[in-house]
Image 1 (cartoon, chains in turn purple, yellow, orange, brown):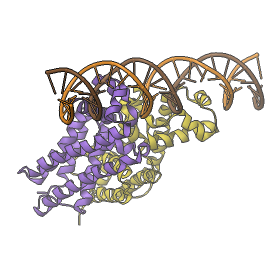
Image 2: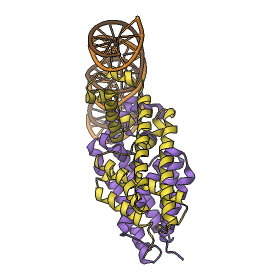
Image 3: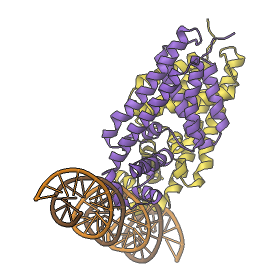
Amino acid sequence: MEMRDQILASAQRLVQQRGFNGFSYADIADEVGIRKASLHHYFPTKTDLVLTLVEVYTAQLEAELLRISNAPSPANAKLRAYAEIYHGTLESGRMCLGGMLATESLTLDPALLPSLKRFFARNTEWLTEILAVGHVQHLFVLTGSAADHARMLLSALQGALLIARATGDHAAFDMTVSLLISGLLRKG
Amino acid sequence: MEMRDQILASAQRLVQQRGFNGFSYADIADEVGIRKASLHHYFPTKTDLVLTLVEVYTAQLEAELLRISNAPSPANAKLRAYAEIYHGTLESGRMCLGGMLATESLTLDPALLPSLKRFFARNTEWLTEILAVGHVQHLFVLTGSAADHARMLLSALQGALLIARATGDHAAFDMTVSLLISGLLRKG
DNA sequence: AGTAGGCTACCTAGTAGTAGGATGTCAACC
DNA sequence: GGTTGACATCCTACTACTAGGTAGCCTACT
């Protein structure tokens, strides 16, 4: 299973940095050191490969979300930990895998879309839960429903990632994160 | 100049819907009804074409921003009008041209990046101005600097566009816009 | 005469994907 | 214990097609 994992790691990096339409099997072959044709043994089509990628990525996310949820920290610290994931993505010169594929969704095999939707649904669901908990603990002041705030936070983080790629301004990304969280906190 | 404009319109739509790496000269040729080779008469390279696109798009934006700025409406209405631009983009099945290219920036000819940066800088600058005016008029309550809020708003709008593409949930987009604006308003 | 705008025909490189063979591993069988 | 067959992994070689881009020609307008 060593080679399969190498292929997935290489493909994941390529999708996050260059997009589905921005890389080819040849790029992966060069990187992992086998021939292009051999890649088709593991993943018959590019769609198969990226579908696996989305599933793996979602599973990795799930593990992180559970780790954060189970930590004995206040809700605002959990939001910070969540934002920290995006920070790491930015530092490695990548987009969120889901975000990248979302922009390209009109060019993707429709078979990928359900998994992609699930990815975003899971993010929204988790954020909603954290916001609801922070709300009943009087930590957060919400001007809309927890689900609405969750979608807004997710949008802002994805967008901040996108903009930081164009501007190169990582400090602005951090500032946006801080503003998003401080905007939720009870004043005084 | 008729054909040139047709080419630009077609290319703009293709970039916004499919991304730089998701369309080809053949797609444009099919659409505008001339041969692929003839396109090179107007735009020698794909980079030339997209560079022009970014400049035109920025100029169109500038006109809209001035129109909104000069309207005799309160700052929150101006923000709504700005968000309305994004709403229209979403309804036509497109990403923001800048946002789409931003995600693909690692695969673009570096010659495109300065114009792309200017596009985002202009958006941020305009939003900052509107927010500052709303602030001195005691319409908005800001928890950070006007520039910080501007970047956050821009991020959230771009991200909301991206997510709406994956989920197909346009109502969520509208809700995010409302939440962003109501979150700025002075309470009570 | 020069230029703008279009054409056919072509080039080189790269795309995803296939065919079929070489090598190796491992388990079942006699 | 050695043979056999199934399967995994990787290869060379290739197909069919698309990519961006070029060469050179034709026509119409100024």
